[in-house]
Amino acid sequence: MSASSPASRASGAGAGVPPGPSLTVDVVIGLPGDRVVLVRRSNPPPGWALPGGFVDVGETLEAAAVREAKEETGLEVRLVDLLYVYSDPRRDPRRHTVSAVFIGRAAGEPTGGDDAAEARAFEWTDLPTPVAFDHGEILADARRFLLTGTRRRP
Image 1 (tube, rainbow, N blue to C red):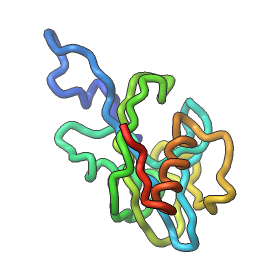
Image 2: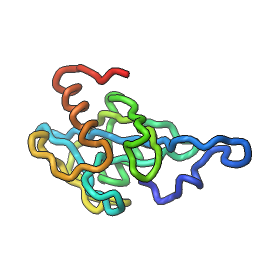
Image 3: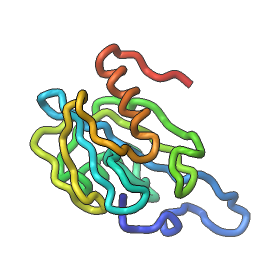
Image 4: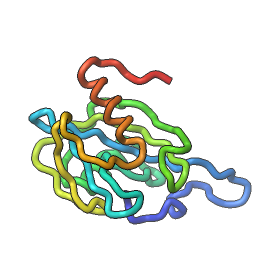
């Protein structure tokens, strides 16, 4: 996630603007060899997570996803699909976030950066634990989509 605070990114913050969820993006990055990239978080909550973070004011979701992936993994990611938008208010213990989750492709080996203590590629059959947030659910949804083309429905 970016070093800037959510408050500094709030658009129109001030009197008369109701509070709302924070907008985020996550990327399921597939690598050759049927592997997926996860980052080990350096900040609470602990665990492994999908690369992602907050969307900056004036930034598209797609640009934010590519930027966050690059910052946290060092990989140049090509987005290939939008998996789903996850919005359960309990998905992030810090605050209510809504995340647009993309499927992306990259080549090379990831290296941790920004607020990722480590970035690694894992085989789908050997994912690490613990997994932060609702990313275990997202990974299961992504795997089902990649194998069958079946998407989660609202």
